[in-house]
Image (cartoon, rainbow, N blue to C red; front, side):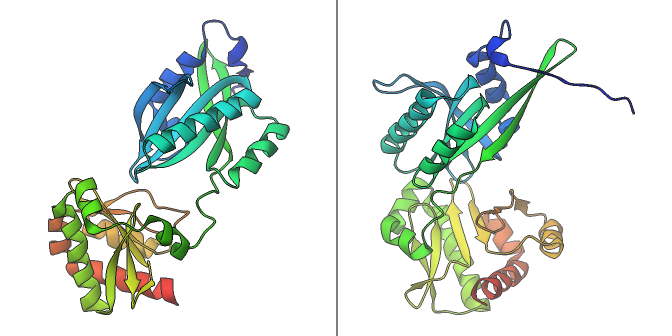
Length: 289
């Protein structure tokens, strides 16, 4: 195997390259920045009296990422601009969870410390962008140097107290038919676990309550054509094999929430009721023991 020495370059000083070029590369393949399965919602998004947001992405959970790019070193204005655009988008579209994302070629320790301070109260992700030149072509590598920690600092009870909604909210956000899938899955919970468990409608998901107390060993996220089912289970080979055998549409595992994410339609629930029940039993045991 031959060794190839990579020639690291600085995009800020590279002829013919600017932020728009980087925007287009990321927009064409969002997976390269390491934020999971995201799709582009907008580029150069105009902000009221505040310039333009470089890129706006959204993931399967309706979380939105407000991305600002800077060639060279990050600075005070880059950080302030990123937070300002995040705040504007969050206020304009409060139905979505928003995360601020800073991308720069050089995030110095000084500014990393500053971003970390904001990160305690504002969900911010900092990504360092490295560029290399190979055979007169440019390759980009993105490394997350500060992950999102905000929005993980309070308990389920505190979250629910702030974001309780009703069934109508979800029927309008998704459809009555997909919200009804949560009812069908609740019936499985009643049959396999306990009848004193009910749905709890929250802004970002449908959870569970047991005798009036939050007990989210499973959460649900209805969409227009299906429902995302999220049993709280550690990722293991056994559970992976069960889901593979059922040929269910399994999304990326949520490492922060420690749950599987399974896309289901009505026929999936009908055809695999017993196995789904077993997964729910395991989730309840894992969560409450």
